[in-house]
Figure 1 (cartoon, helix red, strand yellow):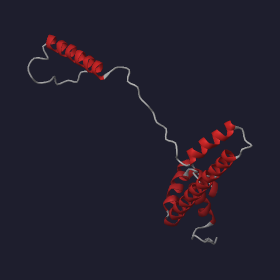
Figure 2: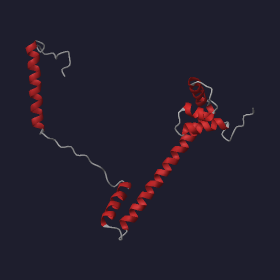
Figure 3: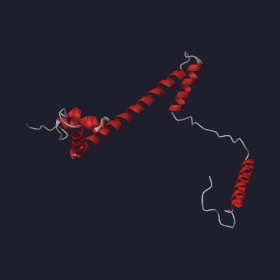
Figure 4: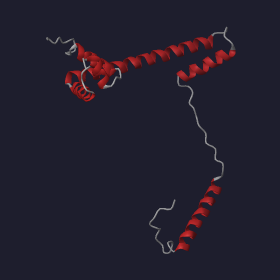
Length: 163
């Protein structure tokens, strides 16, 4: 049987396999969908799929398709973001809309433009001096316990970690 190669130097089955893999299918599932694998064991399918994925032309095609897909996603993301900003701006400027809608549209418009930054504030429950005193008290209790057991004698710290 003659193997016809397409525009990218791949057979139709290899091209189908590459497209499925680039779309997120597992190698084995892409192989099953692209080739007659009915009478093959899972191990054979996995092995053949792996070998096919390492074939130079197939690998290059998968990589090219993944790059193409990422560019499409990026373009679509930019156009969607632009559309959201356009609609939000339109709603914000429409005097016929209720104030709540216009205010929300302004907020969304600002978010799409990066005008808002979420800030998380941490509150201290206790002043630093109270925390320091508590740490000193706990350390003294630990040292006292070590001295009582005979491990804390001398200037060197204990060799085991205290939890």
